[in-house]
Length: 329
Image 1: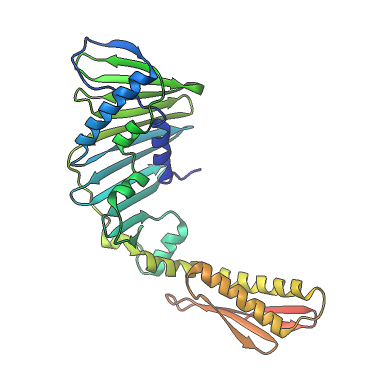
Image 2: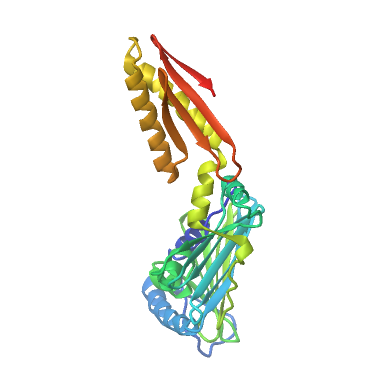
């Protein structure tokens, strides 16, 4: 895939959290490496998770870097509990996936398709690249858990691997373990016992690193010029491919009518019924009444009008013996 969506960060989190091994800070001799059992690592992990959770109270953020089969990507993320805001932005191969959330107000999502950009232009908003969805019940913690690599959760989820612990002369620690297929996870913990970074290496296919910072964060939301509402975008999307959609519904209606006739004479009543049902299904999928079906002699007219440009498109379908005659009107 050329586009990395939000799940890319979640996937990284899940793979890292398969067993993170850390320990509380103490006074150690320089660069001493020891082996730890699963039980020892799990016990130490619990203490570091507590320290990391405390360090995260005022806010936290960080960066994510990944190389997958030669493709490079990076992300930034931050959570501001005081302001009730959070965001992530992930970019790979010049393509961006991003999201912002505001507690009890709603969330912003970066456009992911060409159709969304085309819809924004129909709305007269060519600079827009985010869609805002109102949600007065948005819980910031839930949104963060779904979208961000929360450090304490990554530490607490699982630590079911034996590995090594290297204690440095400044009191910081490096933990690492290897899982099957030679994937190596490396954990850096500061002298304060708080998680600094997590790295996963699976050469030559994968290399990824999450680095954290703790304390108050600033989350700047997309501007008004960059944003359209979900309702407005949904309506505009329904008209982006209106000419093609109108032709498609007319064509499918004709084919379905012929199939229903089973080689016998096509009835006008059946043609009209099928055309209306087909158009209604399209409108329901689009969440907008794009297509209208009106009766004409011996059949129907399937038509649409773009409310943003005024463009009109229509096709007539007429029963003629064992055939359906379709013409652009």
